[in-house]
Each structure stands twice: as structure tokens, then as C-alpha cells.
Length: 115
Image (cartoon, rainbow, N blue to C red; front, top):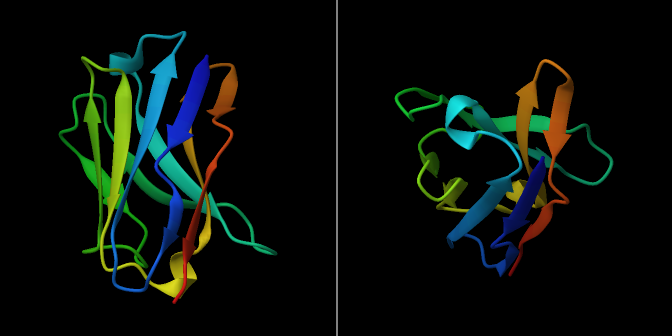
């Protein structure tokens, strides 16, 4: 299983970023996908999740209405569109998938929201 995130960077408050996570080594379309984030000194938290066909999504309260998770099963990729970014969104963002053996994580991509 390999998960590779991209798309992070430095953005001003109110700006937007789109994160991508390219997956390989497993049957991507049959697994729920998630985005987590971890800010310095804080625990890793679930940001968003999406079911196998994308029919159902859920979000942390802190990002509802601003972030959108989506997936393209033909490309084995999950996305996180982040709008109206705030300084408190600054964190390393990780994509995650899970099977009967446990959790799998990417290396993370840094998102910094600052003026």
C-alpha cells in the first residue's frame, strides 16, 4: 500500500488549496478514504472521509462548509479542496486508508496559512 500526498504549500488567509493523494498497491475503489491533519503540539485529527463510491462524506465541524473531499476511482486518487483557509488550518495533512491489517498513511503534505 502506498499513499502519496501533494498540493500543500503556503497560502494567505481566505485562500484555497487542493490536496491530492495518489494511492497504489490495493483496490482503491473498495476502500473508504480519509484525510487527517496534525498541527504542532496537537493530536492527529480526522478532517474528512468519503465512502467507496463517493456517495457519502463527513467532515470535522471545524471545516464544514469550507472543505470538500472527493475521489476519482479511475485515477486511484482522493482530493481535499480547501477554501476560506484560516491560520488554524495550518498542519501537516495526511491521507489514510484502512483494512483488516490496520491503518496506512502517506508521508503528509504541509499546509501553512499565514499572511
